[in-house]
Image 1 (cartoon, rainbow, N blue to C red):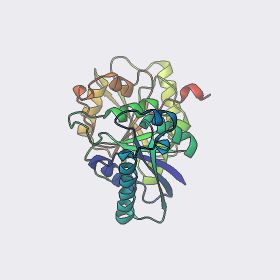
Image 2 (image 1 turned 90 degrees about the vertical axis):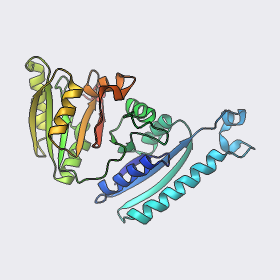
Image 3 (image 1 turned 30 degrees about the vertical axis):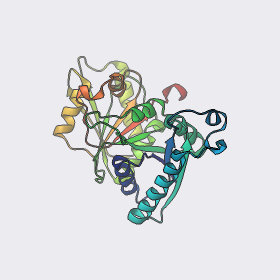
Image 4 (image 1 turned 60 degrees about the vertical axis):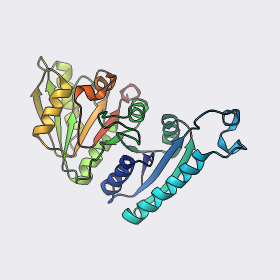
Length: 284
């Protein structure tokens, strides 16, 4: 059984993410954790010492969190009730990134699914602050659902690759499982910015081919001087249901996150994207 973590702030976008997840995983046995984190508007000594349960003063944040999770669970069961799915709600007095890190370890989370914007997210900003922080600290794959994105069966997956580092089967496991479950084809896209592939890149590409041997895949190469723009242009010409990116040093995705204002680079992907964390340092 897969364990899926879905953070929620009870916003419209958060519900859209939940709706997507329920449909995306409707055929698989899963346990879903719906997580809401909160902190008080101001810190009190009783909170610092022991959290809200030790405070003699009622905290509206606790009530709002529990009530919101209860309503979310009711809506999920009413609209997407599935005998293959188990649900659990978690209300936590904590910072979102810290709570997620703890849950990944304690609950054995396989995948995090979250939206791009929260209740206060500006429409012109592609990635909200929480999403960026979670992606940067994550040690497991994260599927990010753009605001307003509706579920579509996954038939074609675009995987961006620069071949500068060796790929490992355990890193690609989630992407491969999605392809196998949905009988989807993976297109490995390399943006050729200047020179031909080096010997090292050719070797990494060959090993990637071995990693993808269990699924239908193809290699594509496009020329472009700026990788983010080239990928966006490719997606505009060729429709895909899922984009997969590695969050590695000097990767396209890392370059995108370095920008303070993500919207300035025009990165407005309208399809879900899976971010795979860099585990190469721990893989032999």
